[in-house]
Length: 249
Image (tube, rainbow, N blue to C red):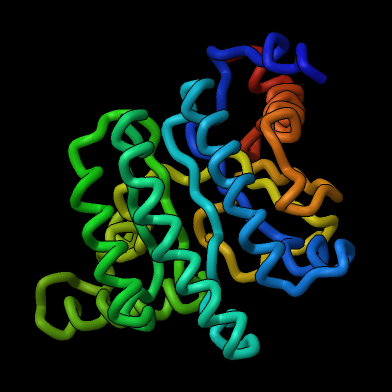
């Protein structure tokens, strides 16, 4: 496994990798621990994968950290996750700055507790001039929420006469998404053996390569990341064309 990194073609890296970090709770339960134990160990995986992407030269890494549906989980788990978020941000900002990593967030952050939102906004500001890996945290995010939110904003523009309905295009619609300044993911990884997208970047992953692994997120490390990237690099991405068309252009 250690030589996997040397098999990766640095000229054909996915520009943007998105990850559904799943399996924290099940991993903890298999260890005989409560679910928050898994979330705390999941932070180690975040550090490891962020480092791995930065080392390789990946430009964007989006992590599905907390969905809008996660607010319906038991209160003690949600409270613990919010506390963990704040503690992690406080600890990681100096490391992010040292490695020139720029923090972004997508999602309905108005739902976050005030103390968590304050720490998040400060971290975003403190890393805003960094020029390395763009680390995008999807917090209180769901794709259906994002699309409805975008439609509402676009409808207002039409009502105000700023945009004509017949002129709405994919390019215009993209401007109202949370990811308007972020390229679509080329590779989406889901951990824990589940084979679903769970309301994550549904609009943006139209032509994204999907990689599913049985590994729980707290056990996911750089070697697993390298496996996913090599899998990506061994695929033929046709975008609706035929292999013959690609080979003759």
